[in-house]
Length: 166
Figure 1 (tube, rainbow, N blue to C red):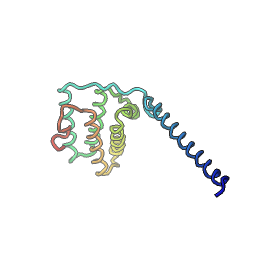
Figure 2 (cartoon, one colour; figure 1 turned 120 degrees about the vertical axis):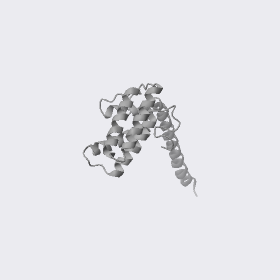
Figure 3 (cartoon, one colour; figure 1 turned 120 degrees about the horizontal axis):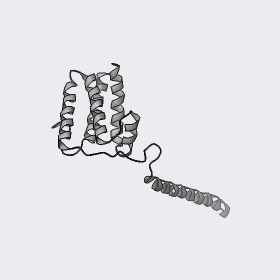
Figure 4 (tube, rainbow, N blue to C red; figure 1 turned 60 degrees about the vertical axis):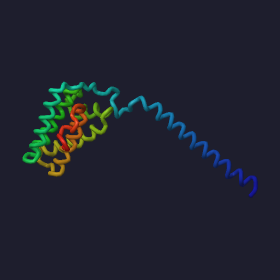
């Protein structure tokens, strides 16, 4: 192989390696810079969640158990009651609930998983309001609401809101 051929192969390879290394360095710097700054999809301040006194926690736990118990006989009503209970709990913990999108944005910063549960369950609640939700969707909504309830009402309940084994 001639020197010219070797240079024709080596120089583009070196340039390619340098370009790839530069791209990685730029991406790493960009990620480091963004780490402390939420983007437009996230609000710049998270909700100021307030702790609940034990007697209030216990009241919510009793209400949640009641909602779960009515699911077998009145699933649409149970899903609607779960939506109402979670909304009240969110409001009491300090999350605004005037409209659906506001609590969704507020939850997105520190409670991304909870947001997914809230959106999925709330959509099914809207279907249930017009009697268009299937039994499986209603059951799924209750699972989402229970997960959201668990996240909104932590501490002090070893077995979770559903009781032992839920």
